[in-house]
View 1 (cartoon, rainbow, N blue to C red):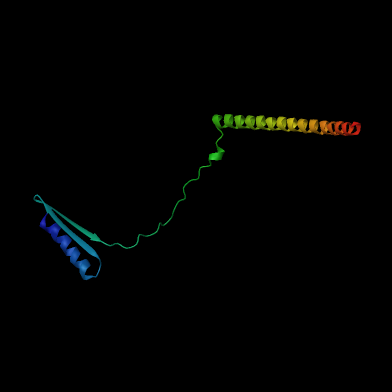
View 2 (tube, rainbow, N blue to C red; view 1 turned 90 degrees about the vertical axis):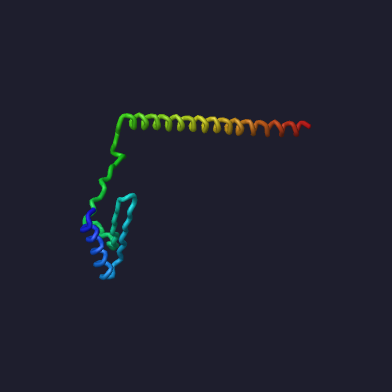
Length: 117
């Protein structure tokens, strides 16, 4: 870096300092090398002029073969579960029916047993 470049950093720092702006001048040397840096507060970042919305991907529109197979498997599973539920309900009704049938028979037998005694 030439002296004229270094002088331009110092000159710019003095201009900023005199105008009352925040500025920071860094000068560093190491093993015969020299660095200079000038930091200046720029203020708030301006908002975007025009923001383009991100394109929306509708994943529901995809109807690939694996999704179709999965739907078929789920439908079959629901039908099997519904069939099992119907079978269980039929078994429960059968047990209740047997209880209702045997209950009057048992009551009748108990009445006849008390009459005979």
